Image (tube, rainbow, N blue to C red; front, top):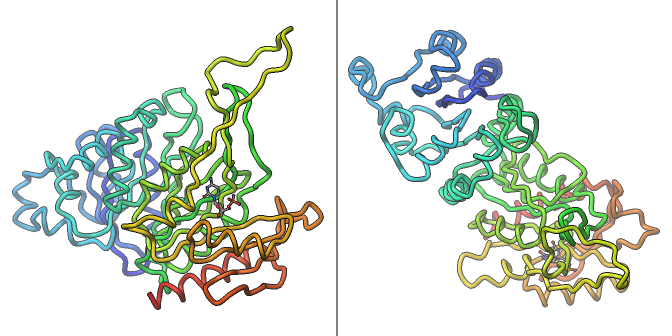
Length: 399
Ligand code: C5P
């Protein structure tokens, strides 16, 4: 429920603006007050009348509207809400935000506000993937802006890929998670999850059997305790939870870069099954069968993301949690790993095929901390996640 929460909703100029009308309805159904702001480009896609009728509030449009300035200055307008939501956040609006422009009402409000900001990007896939947009996104994340979506899918422009605005209910989920009351309220937590895919050539890759189930459950459990979760995921089988900021990657190197843009965080949980090696010189040409014999692959070592973060000299998260999936001497190997990596806790588990844990629904873990090992009974991955999230909340509460 969002009763008593006030959302300043900035609607940018993109075809996805029509979804923002539904978003307004969903927010109001849950008791939120919505003050809408429509950019000039936004009026090309939805009318001020429909926006204000659905919001049950005046729609603000122009910076130099004297009537509005007399009633409410733009500084005041930027501060009335508990959360500013930009949906759709176009490439142009994101660029303005990242650069600190203030040349219209929306960008001025975004620069003047002292309330948290959430963006729901929507744009053509090429625009989304462009280095400039990705740089702006990294800047916004570093400025503590939360990001919901975009999703993969068919786009109005006829292309397919990431760029579709998140659905209204996903944005509502993210907003509810933002306001979720709990012991991790105000804390920012990073979770890595899923496998990585290391290319051999443009069509083949090396992967592993991680489904992403445990990492996803941990991200969900942390968000439900009120944390702002940045979820860096490799190509996993299951969808990321609602209400977390998702960064999708393929390779270990991309995962490290994504983790570095997500810092600083209060706690970091490294549940991803990262490939230890990548194929050196994986090119953009498909390897062909040859009469001269089998191709040989040379491997290069991937960065150890957990170790890199756990050993940071400045800006290290207060709590760094690693996983140790082992098939032999689980406890001894995991204890040694904790020291070698420099993390605070290790969640150790036996992934021998007969346990059915890798890719399954249950997990039997031992948590290794400064106080030594603590074995938990075998339980569902969701229950492991809830228990771990509670322990993280306790630990951050005392730090
Ligand atoms: O070294 P190993 O893969 O056994 O360690 C497992 C732990 O280290 C997990 O927490 C995993 O997420 C993390 N890891 C990592 N980067 C790597 C390898 C593992 O973050 N390259």
